[in-house]
Length: 339
Image 1 (cartoon, rainbow, N blue to C red):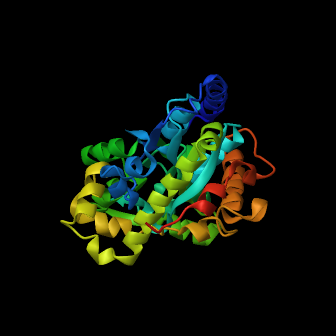
Image 2 (image 1 turned 90 degrees about the horizontal axis):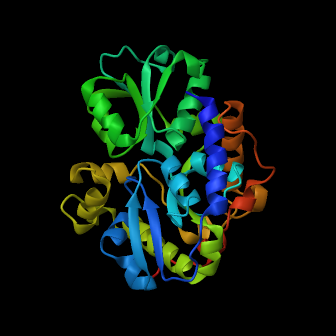
């Protein structure tokens, strides 16, 4: 792991963010997404956001939160999905983005899995092994936490920077001994591996929880506030439909077909993968449990703890005194899960 890479990345991101133009008044937007198996993929696939907002939407798929943040810093993307670790890193670097929605509470949806026959039955067995993980992601953060928990230094393990599709390919070739990742790749490697620990277990043991969020360029979001509220309402409606009608979200249903098509997961894996996440309704989103509450709010405290750990590992140079400065609960407070 090259710690200087993070410092150089920070400088390049800040420079790009300062130079990037923000087209606030045009009714079009580019939204970055990843391959997380979440309900709003169905709304994404049927053009629901376009129908509700009247905006032209360009969706771009990225392999990890670090890639999303880089695209936002360069001005290519106005809204994106990113985990709490890359969000904490972005805010620590002074990027002009804000967290506006908790996409999911990760819990058991990300996990460290060891290959069958690799001789890894616990965290301590990872010494000298090769682990594939997307750098600057929530999985990367929890990999570092897990290694510290086991008394291992990152230098004692070969932590390799791989996007999820690269992890799947390396696993098939036998190039790595373990991986920390999310679905749909997680389901694939579990078929020939053993789960060592999940993000939910790490959060329970250490208090360092992770989540996926929606981040937006501050200036663009303020100039397109009505869009932001309607966009988040579409996500909330999809989450509510899933939570109330899980039996309907089954193999062969339009919803599961759409999620599989967008993410690359198999239809058979979608219901179980989605059940690992917890999706949060608008009222709770804006409460002190998550986006609200200022510095004492749940998201702000999680980002602060994440940033402090990343700094201790040398992956970021400094931390903010208050991460609520990079959180805007206003759009979530106005969003609704009702049609």
